[in-house]
Image 1 (cartoon, rainbow, N blue to C red):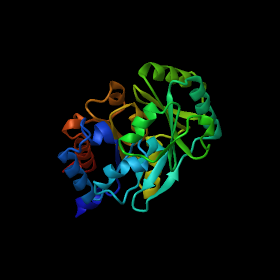
Image 2: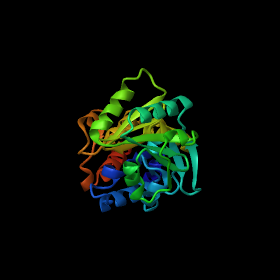
Image 3: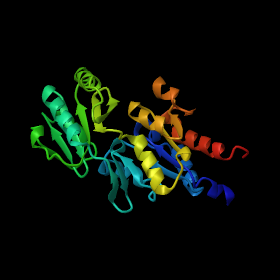
Image 4: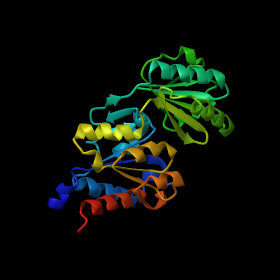
Length: 278
């Protein structure tokens, strides 16, 4: 019984694609069993993703973690799937939204996807945006002119297009001096902006505060640059074996490749860290 209680002061968050799931977006059985064990011993486990609640739900509900809110929109929100409500939300400022609109007009060949608190807006031609919402059949509206999108409760803005155009968007934002934004590379074909000081890591710490868990007992595992700030923020950072070297440099633990059960590797490491004599 002592071991079962001993993990109750831990909160672990995992990215989904390329971390919890393998490269075919399937959940390795080893990860599923490790999560069940971790939770049975009192640990709090959750998912931290760029997805909105609608897109994350199927991934969340297949795991025994219903009592722990999920980190959504790359940290812009905490969503409680038991209550079906957002319990915390970090909206972009008026200045942040203005900068997004300015960039959308400067780079008209790039689709701009606005993930608001309750809906997704697709602007521009919509080709990349339609691909974004198609996989999970996400609720959305296509509003060609970004000026016509309601300027309220924007969680994050995704610029999506061919890599050459995304590189220009990235340079546009990174050249700014202290913008009221958090900048995030999510793939070669997309670039994201959120409210300042908002990312998966800040959301993990906010969730830990809500749960009464010390920052030193927060852990997270990811595989790509949109996980970088999270790994720099939590008490015990980890990454998958296939992660870029920049993530490995800031990680206390490097797990195996996601195809082989990286989350299981990390949870076993946490258990040993918590019970060094076992």
